[in-house]
Image 1: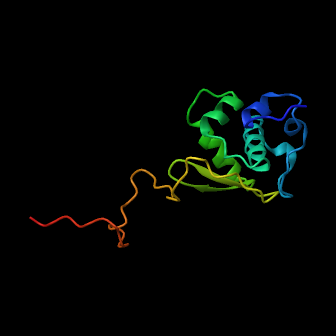
Image 2 (image 1 turned 120 degrees about the vertical axis):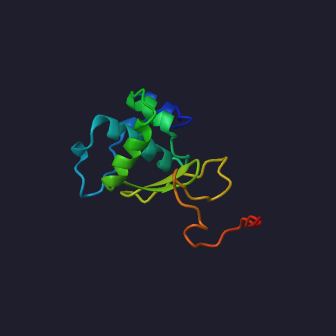
Image 3 (image 1 turned 180 degrees about the vertical axis):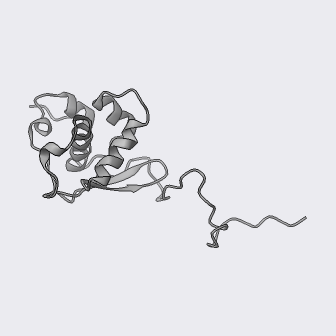
Length: 141
């Protein structure tokens, strides 16, 4: 049996150990409670955490689950998070995911150099919320 290079290689390889092993599930969730797409996304994220790889990006999750929509990757991750299967720490361009059942976490992405938390569109600036800012104030005219 060959060792898979990344999550998608292992997913498409029918003989890979990760595709044959049962998924680690928390005790409050029955194994058959997940839909097919959620199982695929959970298996990809679990495989990444088990092998110390970065969390799969949205496009990888969408391709593996068979979706063409670019919004399905984040929706699947949010569904898994709302069911209590994973805990997600979101950053500006990447995310770290912890599998609740095993406590294992995905690795940092190699190009992730700063721990800037995710700031959603339309969020108020730090100065508008009364928090200190590192920006210089504009000169009054």
